[in-house]
Image (cartoon, rainbow, N blue to C red; front, side, top):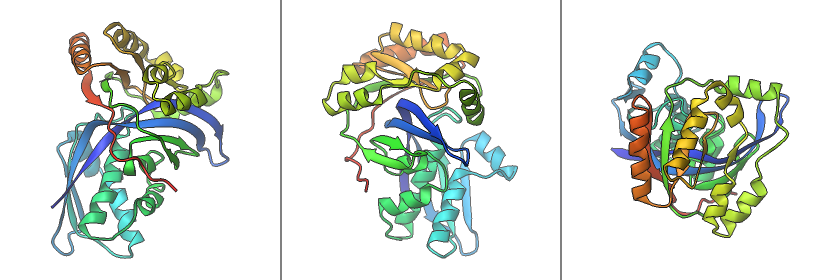
Length: 297
């Protein structure tokens, strides 16, 4: 039995720098993994059983019953194709990252699947080779293969590992609303803003260990689009700051909002108050998750 954790990510900065002829957007993002994670286990199955995925998520189980594609299954299929063989494996997924939240939960699960199956079947693929496969799964998956703190460019596949920031406490709050990422990008294209995040200054603050200066520069160019349709996002951000956050923005295309705090006690108290304000929303507490410094070629 092999175990892997699939860590959620947050966008400390998200900028769009262009659009390719194939419709994909060029991005410039600074992404950070956090301690909130899903758990996956992998064990070899009986010959001929193929890839079998079970999950405690009723939504995922329902989608699989309807025949919808799943990023975990897609990752397993692509890995076995890369190795020129079929595989019989039982995968169990325990969900803790909220679904469709802008936290890359599905991408993190796919990346953990690549790592887990690579270990279980002793394929011996490097992190760089796993990232090469992961590009075919989704834009956030290459980052999730190794995680940490990274500058992500291109469509998300060009990665530059950054010196880790301090492991600061984070509170996340996901409103009970649905956000379509393609619709958010289409709305952005219709009226792109003139002001963009100051990524260069944020990189400098990270490089010089200026945590407060870095947090002040967190910005997401998609936030006005999503928050324009769901004002509760702005409302949650204001409450985060009122409850002691150093700074607060939306992650990804939304709708999850995160706030960075100076202390664990401050984060816990803020999460408790937010849970009281929004009992139907997902509220969680974590930290910046920094392992070894990523290696990117």
